[in-house]
Image (tube, rainbow, N blue to C red):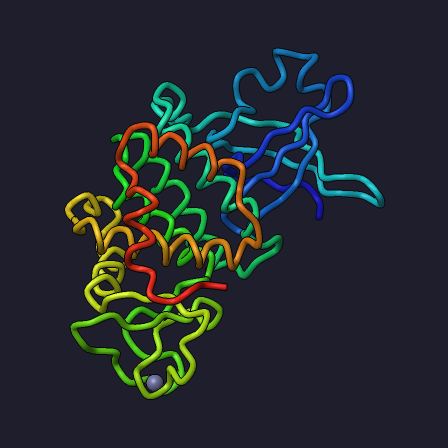
Length: 274
Ligand SMILES: [Zn+2]
């Protein structure tokens, strides 16, 4: 890679050595890229105020040579999403979305997919900056993040026989296969998550609505508890661990009293989940 000029979003920023900083960037044309900003902490002039989390930048990067990291040469701030830094809930949700992207965005992904991902990331931060989130919106944003990362679950048809899953009662959802199973295909119910068709429909709507109007979507407490469990399971399945920012975000939601209580969450668990 020679010199690269691009827009970029800072996903992660870590101090390195005496005076440098390592940054994980999301680029619209190639996904994630790790760069080193030499002297970033020594010279206040060179990158002044640009290397903070959430910043949308215009950057110039020198490509990596043997055994060295790509170097950030210039950075100019395009947008800083300031409200994310002053409200704890918005900050926590913003950090969580960035950490999710940092874990799951590929390096050198397909250009069209990466452009969509980049545009999702900016729209999502803009959305969070504009209003404090509630639990429904948080859930939909998480689901949309998975979708933007190419991990969209099936929410309508049985993942095995492709027939539409219908019915009033609880159905089952296979997290590893990424979708519901119909009564015929769900031979063994062990390890499956129970979910109502109405909850799947609400999540489907959350994926298809314009991001700007997802606050119009509302779910009752039990549908929301089901939706949370489903999206959390999917996220954990793909990430393979609990993200630090997720714990912090969960705690803020709990303390603010807008999280479903553990009892509520468990009441709709029909089957033990492995
Ligand atoms: Zn089936």
